[in-house]
Amino acid sequence: MTKNREVAIAYQQLIMGMITLFVVIALGRFAYTPIMPYMQAATHLGDKGAGLLATFNYLGYLIGAIIPMFCLIRSKVFDLKVYLMLNVVTMLLLGLTTTYWVWCILRLLNGIASGVGFVLASNVVLDALRRANKEAISGLLYSAVGAGIFASSIFVFFYTDTHNWDTTWVLLGLFSFVLTLIVWVMLKEAPSSKEFKNNATELPLRRYSRRYYVTYYFAYFSEGAGYIVTGTFLVALVKTIPHLEAYAPLSWMFVGLGAIPSTVVWSMIGEKIGNGRATQICFMIQILAILTPILTTNAFALIISSMLFGCTFLGLTTLFMSRGQKMAYETGNGHIVSMMTFIYSFGQMMAPYIAGIILVHTTGYALALIFASIILMLGLCSHVYSQKHANFEN
Image (tube, rainbow, N blue to C red; front, side):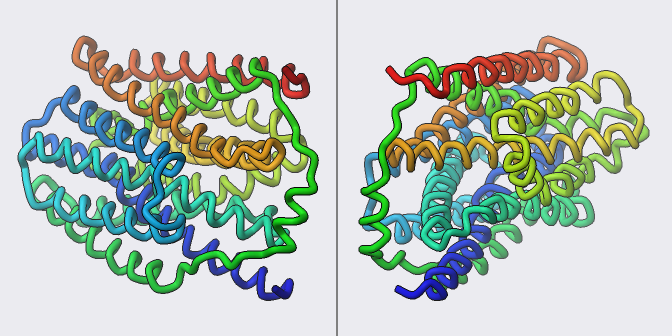
């Protein structure tokens, strides 16, 4: 295969991967955050119930993260298309019922589809970029999540209220269906490259210490558990501030606005100062962003806080996934990305429900945000510790 052909395939796979993450992560998972307050007001759903719904979604994401490790229907590309369609169907059905247990099932299935979609899209796209020697632009893949959060938040702000939240889900589902058709047609199976495989097998394999894996994985687990509390309740939090209540959905829009350039920016920072140091700085900024709403209700400060949060939660995903993909190539272990996604989603599954319980027994969101920041601090410390053992073998 010619070099130009490999580059063209890499760009095509990248665009299709971006559309996939736009649908399964930005719309299928995160559109729930700005819509949730309207669902609660219309159906009298409490914070604990809303947190449990989020937990079902993250449980599904956890299950979806490990499915590609053990089961493929046909191939990565074919399975990606199937689970992408499942994600769309669950969005559509969410707007056609108000039965809580059905919501739980739909959010579980949506999470499964999102988890599989994230893992397979990452594998397919990053593999294509590596074959074409275009790994430097891999951050663009995850920028689609920020773009989707930004676009969906604007739509929710101008369109959604307590009377039509269900129509919002249906419209998002229909729009996602159109995007899914594009992926079904344009995403192709990766052509085999004998030369690439031969070169790959000649690379010496590296071993990392068990201590490194444990502490590095725990750091990513902490990020999943820590960020998702704000990711689930940010709009509801802003809605409790009297002079900002009407603009609550826009807080999630600013998260998306900060997230759009973050994947590329943090990739560049990681190249400049090293992935490990960039990850630690990103952790610290995220902790500051999460604590800001406790310290002030100033509108400008909350806008900056939302943008920094968006910038860091996708930035950390990019930095961890980039490192994980490199580890996979170095060790010959193709399941590292799936394992990292599983660990990350395990944190996501636990934290919203615990935060929901905290909210039931407290007034305001301060303790829930402190809970999230403590988890992130533990993650930061674990990451610092892991870097000391990155070069030691068992």
